[in-house]
Amino acid sequence: MATPLNAAPSQDPLAAKLSAADDRILLNHWLPPQEGIVPRVRVGTRWVSVLWALPLSFAGLVLAVALAQGLLEFAAVKAFVARYPGIAQAAPSVDSGFPWWLRAQHFLNMFFMMFIIRAGIQILADHPRLYWKRDCTPGTEWFRFQRPVPTGRIWTAKDDSVTLPKWLGIPGLRHTIGLARWWHFSVTLLWTLNGIAFYTLIFSTGQWLRLVPVTWEVFPNALSTAIQYASLNFPVDHSWTRYNALQQLSYFITVFVAAPVSIATGLLQSPAISNRLGWTGRVLNRQVARSIHFISFSWFVLFILAHGIMVFVTSLRENTNHMFAGVESSSWAGLLPFLLAMAVVGVAWAVASPLTIRHARLVQHTGTFMIGWIKGLAEWWDPRSQLSERDISPYFWLNGTMPRSAEFDRLVADGFEHYRLRVGGLVENPRDFSLADLQAMPKQEQITTHFCIQGWSGVAKWGGVPMRHILDLVKPAAEARYAVFYSLADGGDGGRYYDVHKLHNMRHELTILAHEMNGRPVSVLHGAPLRLRCENELGFKMVKWIAAIEFVHDFANLGAGEGGYNEDHEFYGYRMPI
Ligand SMILES: Nc1nc2c(c(=O)[nH]1)N[C@H]1C(S)=C(S)[C@@H](COP(=O)(O)O)O[C@H]1N2
Ligand SMILES: [Mo]
Image (cartoon, rainbow, N blue to C red; front, top):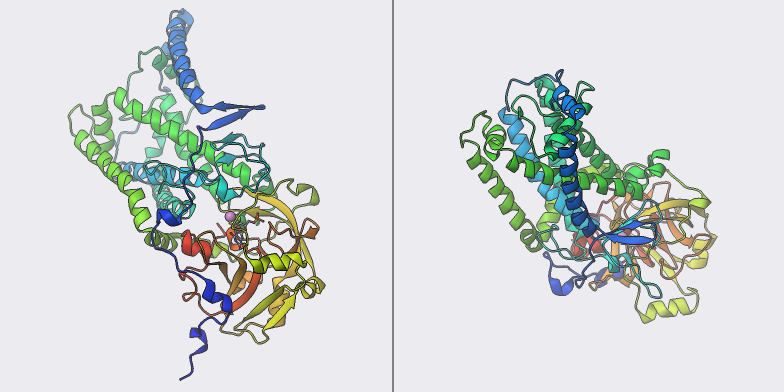
């Protein structure tokens, strides 16, 4: 019996060179650990350790106490505090207490944030530098927890990633961004749904009046509250019905500024979204978005610290009664549910990393189930944004595992004269193209931003054959659903590098087989003689040193069946426009 076409095994000889991969992280197959350094911030040309923040904020607090106590000696300041006691006269009070849904959402928020923050730090550790400019030129970063980029040797973005302890990052270790992203995005989806429900409920019940200042008097009252806290005479607490002005402002910023800013700047780091937004995508380019995302994260961390401390020092019993029992009393009612809630968070904290390392494939598949469809939707956007010559980056990070074979060396030695691109599989006209054939085809040039999953970006002018032209020549059969790109190079963990794209994505205006970079033949390091540019995807999907393209109906039988080398070996997703 003939094999039906759609189940036909892959025909390309390189399919046999793909390797299966482990379903868990095995350390002897993983990037060896590499410690980072204490985070530093650049002030002019000097790098200052963030540890200075500890003595400085301690000194600042001591000074603030002295200052506030001194100020309160003045009659005018006393009168000011009497006039603005901390809660604006005009601030409405909320008499319905803390309903169960609000308390449940508060807990869920804390629970989700634990995963989001830890996985976020893990993502940052994959490119432990922050910049304000799109091109990520070494030395221009304003924050790093990695040494300066070494010169005089090849230093890829993967070389740059640093190890995190398992209790801090999810899942800890080094270059585990694939798994960290599933956690970060999936839990963010849940957190956002919880947030939408929270917004809806507070605005339909009047609970929003706790959080949103409705009078300008909030500002003098916030100043007064700050003076009172600093003088160590804490203001009277009425939080059952009204928060003090400082509390209200900080809650307001957290709920209505930091949360939406984080979501927006998270999305802006995606190639599909950024490349659709034109002007906005340029001004709020990936590095600006990433830096603001980090500042917003820093606010959350400081808020959680301050909020946590205040819960303890301003009557733990009353505060936990409010938020964990919904009662206004000095009983012990809230303490047990509070301790239980903290225990749940603690247990989840402890098991998140070990389980992720053991069941990496399950985390990948669960993540795909939860948010793969959103990523898939973004892929339908045809990327449009193009930049101009003066946007071209002076530096373009390298990434990936270079080809190391006699076959490749021979190709380089004779200037790729004997290079042949094999295009076959489910097509009407299987073809072989020499580099000269490809150079003679219609050439498309585009100046675009490259978005590496690890966090860096770079702008270059790419020139090459539109993929649409190749499709017209070989004519994929109706059964063909995917294009497989095989590389001349192996991946970092052995086995051939490859990646799979939906056919639809190959028809985008900006999908090309590039043989030129910045007006010259693509260099060996950047993928000579031919590399893919597919501007709505992350960098790892753009195979360098392309050997063959095969059209298939299914990719389950290739490698570990996840749709690409990093998908198989590093648990990435095969559709990655976000
Ligand atoms: N064959 C092959 N192609 C590859 C890789 C690789 O390891 N092997 N790395 C990918 C990754 S992760 C990125 S970000 C880009 C980097 O391209 P560049 O080195 O030109 O910056 O190439 C992609 N293509
Ligand atoms: Mo990448």
